[in-house]
Picture (cartoon, rainbow, N blue to C red):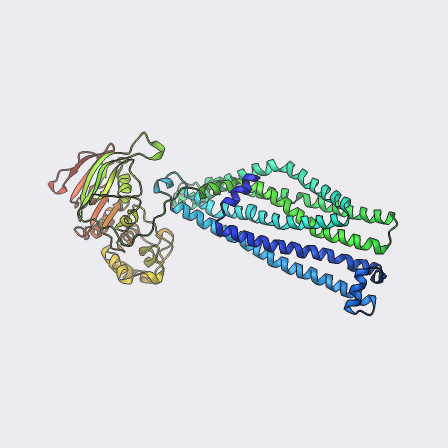
Length: 589
């Protein structure tokens, strides 16, 4: 439990911790008002049961005279009204305090999920190669919700209502120490015993809930992402079953958590009612009159009215802390991942002479003893077009990722005009690159938003937008065939466009900022021959104006390149000028 509270405190920012103490001050004020409200009921009930107390009690008599009442009935009415006013004011203040409390807890959900996304986005590209995107989405959304509901909110409620319990117990101790300690001991023992019984199960189902949540996110992501293949292969039922089992487990464990958190309420309510009846019988047996019994019953009854719900909330908070510990541990670990913060570069790093790879070797972290690239030495002159070919698995895409700066060489360097790429100048290098992958990621948004990716509509440069579309040879299609031109929505993943149209939008996106370097990673490999020619024509029109690197399987995609680099067995096998008609000697795979 201590580790859970410590981790929860550690994930809060300094600003959030200061807000927490502000909330705590409001909680203290709320507790004070609650206590005053309970105390105020005693004189009212005492005078109501025995009006003669107005003259018998010196304090009441002095108040009676000072306020100028004429009859005891008026005084009783005034005491009742004052007590009611204190209770109403306390309730209103409690409403405000609880709003502030809930707002703090839920805004922390927002801040933690945002920080988690920021942490993920600041990880090196290699980190994502060993992660599942559905699991990351689950952590940012569902697990942070669990953190808010089962940890942040319960802890704050435990503190708030714990103070109410403490104040009520101290008040009762002042009136009758033995009775107060006996009542607190019985109720506390009941809750403690029940918690000790269920705590192990709560921890276990909390871990199983997190695992089931990850499985259902992954099953849903895979099913919706591969709907065409799943439908055609008749695997719909398979994916339904893959989702159904963890989804059911997830729901059962949430239900179990709610049940185990609620169980003591009914037992404690019954115990509290029985105790109150017993108190009345004891007082009556002692021969106390109504004037003596009524204020005592009022005090204990009203204190119980405040204490029992508070005690239940505190218990449920402990139960939820146990249940949510697995989610907290996962989020705490991810929030403390080392990050790389790259300030936006003011301008692109434009190569003046060449891009050079010097003795580059790379092995993925999961297989450090098996490099996918070995001792790569390659010089790419500015404004030349270089084709990179090789069998599947020869390291073509890895080579591009290293040039892009997404992967850091295990050994060797990438140099721009003999200056090595470093974390400090990497953002400027990224600004110099336009990148076209094989699978173009398109938003369910307009054509304009997809070309000018990441910009708000008012930030889009329309001249640059049209120039990029013309260079990608898709402008005429956009203005002549799409119903709303550049404002036409393309559908999720560009489903309303053909493969060639999606690819040309991808090229237009890469060209929007007019980068000096264009990198295409098998950008035409999934297209038919005719569509490939159309896309290739758009690329050919840029030759001599930009430094272009093309990774391809088909020779038709690189036949107009100035040079062709052939990879084999993790090394450069040959570098040829295609115009010599010297064909590569190895199959392309």
